[in-house]
Length: 157
Image (tube, rainbow, N blue to C red; front, top):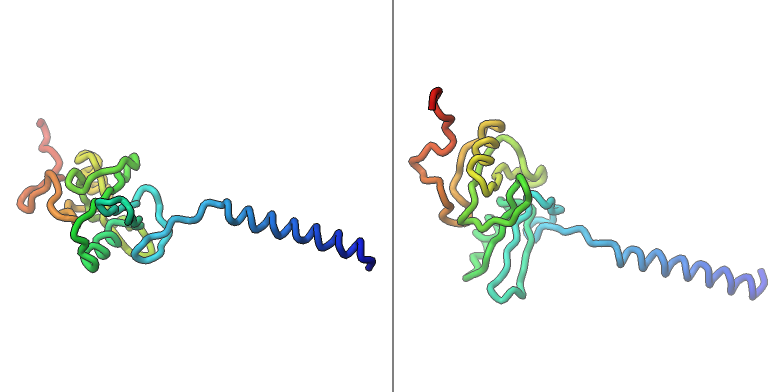
């Protein structure tokens, strides 16, 4: 092989490697759970941020965020949950939590679902043999331990 051919081949291979490397760098990275590394699905995502906004973590489900909170016990910070119906961000104090037979994340086995609307929470509970549960992040709105929040209305009401 001549020097000119060797140079051309080396240049072509170098350009090809550079293009492949650049495409890998530009590809959006897969968002993974801060607690266990599981890929995060948008509908079950939980975010936590410190008051300064500098420290932020994403979690794949309510269970991972609650475990992290239990183990870490940050002095302050804010969680933002996602409504499973439309993906809207919800403060934990405004959320309705349902534990049901449907698993949110197979790797974690989490069965806690988050809703911003009590009607959606009730529908999920009825469809998936669920029940209302208290917020794993502290007091949640609308569900007291002695209430039956998802009891269907009686006929004629």
